Length: 156
Image 1: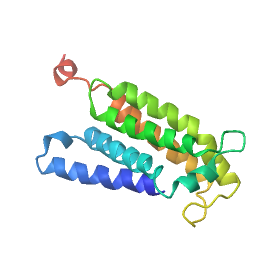
Image 2: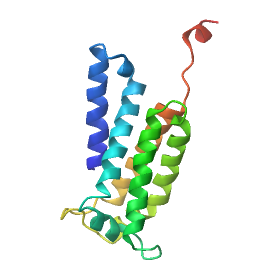
Image 3: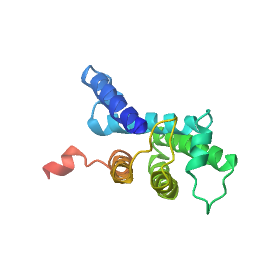
Image 4: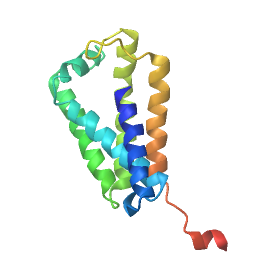
């Protein structure tokens, strides 16, 4: 749930900055993109902290349960977040992050079904993990992959 809170809180903060004149966050779409960047930087960097062992416990038994897997997924999240910041790589980064979310989803299912605790807290239930994944994917598609229609095109 913490990544979701990071996404929501940073998106709201960025939108607030936009309201007060910071052009970079002049729309909700740009603010959510900033929130997605913050969320993936947060989650990616957590793969290199003491939480790496909690992530390792989430990995299904059919996959390699080694720290390099945790480091790799964390690095990919950070690279994807940085890619979202660059207009030329934004769409491919969003697509890569969506693919990564899909590939990591079995670990979320495994953690929920096997009741793997995370930082000594009970696991997030599967009925909540699925909508969160959908929110992250929709957020990436809407903020990074859809091109906005120019106003003069709408007036034609």
